[in-house]
Amino acid sequence: MNSRSQLPVFEYRPVEDVRAEVAAILEREPELSSYGFGKFRPSDDLAAMRADALTESSCQEFEKAIAWLSLMKPTASLNRHATSYGYKHEVERWFAATYQGNSYVANGMLIAAALHLGLRVRRAMHNGRGTPNAYINLPQRRPDPAAGYRL
Image (cartoon, rainbow, N blue to C red; front, side, top):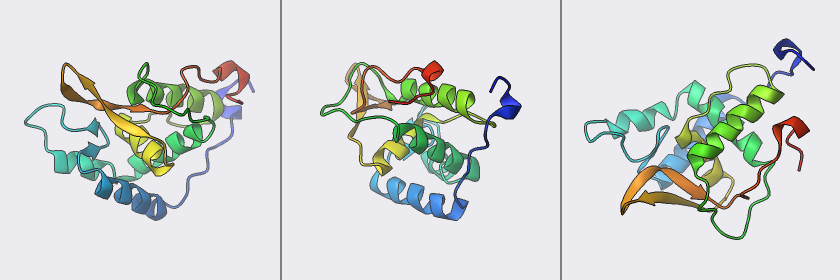
């Protein structure tokens, strides 16, 4: 398949079902939003950022992240050499190479998907402060997009 139009279309589940799964994760993680953990600026409205995680587009991002994470084999310990922000870009590259449509995935939706799948997730710290990103128990080396992401 050489052109984007020849790629298959990703099949999304009903948004109501996905929204309920995301809402359950948000209930367990009060600092999580579509952005990631916490706020970008002190003036940001965390409640509005959390509400964004329940939109249809965010629910689709959550599903793309679940599909990619399901291809990964979790490791025994957290990988502190990569964060959710890097993994979100991996999901976007994989989706763009595999399916038609918008490949964007927000950092927080990748984190929510990892939590939903039962992966170990810990907020990444920098200079003693929490960042929006997370460490996840995923391998350092990830599948090659040219190989079709098959492990």
